[in-house]
Each structure stands twice: as structure tokens, then as C-alpha cells.
Length: 234
Ligand SMILES: [Zn+2]
Image (cartoon, rainbow, N blue to C red; front, top):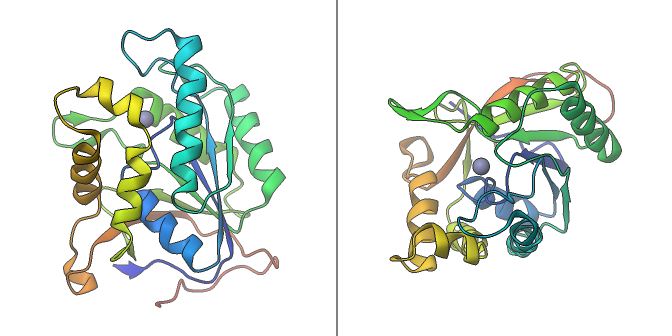
């Protein structure tokens, strides 16, 4: 297990839906932006199919708004939506091209993609959109160019997020309408707290601090064009 690299200034987070970043990764984002790094979000869809009983044309703009507020809570100002259809994502040329163009536009030193493995845990399958999107993102990006990490169930890199879970909870709680329809019985704050603490468990490797785990997919190269050596410790 390695400590997540710190030799970078700009990163881009790529996910399928509004709220995908907020299940864990946002705590790391809060740490990074607090250190003066710039992080931007790219979302394939506006999550318009995600609120039961609400028409997509109402839900889409609402969820974009919730996502922007959520990003703001952890210091992210640049939030872009590609407008692909929620719950019907496919690994197509069109999606790959759109991802590649958005990333090339910003030229981040680091790219992070949401978890796209088949299962979160035994018999807890991942969503098709997450899997299709993650595959498209990996295929869209030149592996010699971009240093790419996936948020991981079985990580090889950890970010110490002690002191950043409150910001992550506030960030997830901004998906207020979404969460209150998802589980009307449980207050939104309580749902957010439970999810964030679950996705940022205490880690023995971090002396019991809470951590977010990532897996290195491709090492890429830094902005200067030099191929990276070993990914160092803090
Ligand atoms: Zn999602």
C-alpha cells in the first residue's frame, strides 16, 4: 500500500452521475483543494433518471444544481456535464470522444475515475452506467500521457482524509432532493454521514486515520513531459 502521490497541482474527476464523487472521493478532493490544488469534475450524465416520480426534464437541471453546490463545498468550481443519457450509458466512440475532448481541454496532471469494477462486495453488483463509463474513460485516455487512478474497493494507494469527512458529508448532503426521495424515512444529513464514514473507513496503514482508496491504472507522465519514476511516499 502506498500513500497517494502529492507531486501534482491539477486533477480531473470523471464520473457517470451527480453524487458519484460524493461517496468517499469528495473527502480527498476537500483535502487537495485545501492544499491549493485545482480539481475539476466531469460528469457523463445529469442524473435525470435518478429521482423517482420526477420527470427527467425537471430532475436533470435540479441534479446539476445540486452537484454544483456539492462541488462548491469541497472547493471545486469547474463542473461539466456531457449530457449522455442517464441509466443508458454505453462504452461508445461518441462517449470516448467526448471524454477525451473534455480532458484534453483541461490537461490535468492527474485523472481520477469512479469505481467501475463488477461488484462493490460479493453479491453487491455495481451499476451498469458506472462500468460502461469507467471502461470508456480508460479507453479514451492515452495511457502514456495521463496518470490515471480509479477509486477502488481494493486500493493500492491511500489518501489520508482525517479532518475532511465533515466537508464530504456537507458535500453529499447537498444532493438534498435526491437523497430525500431515495430514503424519505432517514434525514438527509444522517444518510450523508453514514455513507461518507462507510466509504472513508479508518485504516491501520494511516495509524487509524480515515482514508480513501485508489488503484493506479496507468502511470502516465507529468505535465513537463518526463516519464514518472516511482510514485513516492508523502
Ligand atoms: Zn452513479
